[in-house]
Length: 101
Length: 192
Image (tube, rainbow over all chains, first blue to last red):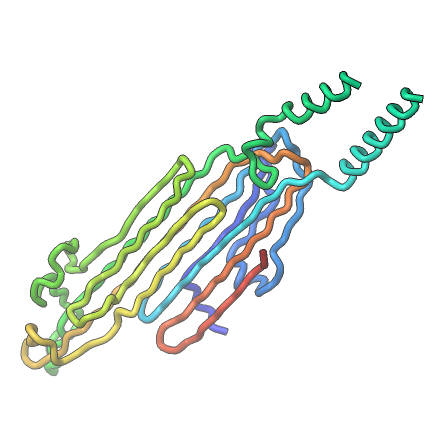
């Protein structure tokens, strides 16, 4: 494999409120090869987070560099939260039924 | 019962950020920057024994094809772009060099939008010719050319999650091609 590197790419995800880095990947193509790049993090809804992408290239004689990146970020309730919510609703319904009777 | 209905309505209305958030995240700020620069050098090689055959920049010897381009003190024809956005507006630009030989030697383009970054650069500027209309190399030498392109892209998104679990999915297509037939590498990373 050719070791000449004419471009670089870095992804980072940081919690800006408590200054912690959750994700830091540099030159993914060379270090890890193809693979799924899906991550899940426990986060604090009251914190501010930063997601960044940076890339560069230096091309000379007959070089070509293409970097095409798309990301999606989705916040969802943790499974435990859903369970608690379900229990709470079930309790509410039970209370309502008992109150009617 | 009436109180229960009122409570449900209040729950639905309690978090206005939910109405404006996408995928459960509330964007706070979006900052983008794309930049590129290219340099193209031309010189003649006299091919005379004992003569100085080193690069001798010829900033404007080839006719008016280079009109409209910047020419550096060293004789290189230069160009590029530098664009920024701090309000989430997408940025996009492209640049390229002309050539008296009829093709674009150096090309750069980039664009950034919401969670999407593209960065392209191509440099095919190496070669020589001993016959070019309008330019006769001194003493029967040849016309040589060489160039390079530098690009950079930066995107920073600040956001606040609405829930306590964050799923990040990255899809990256990276393609590298090196000169002189050294190698070609193609990576498709991740999936939607």
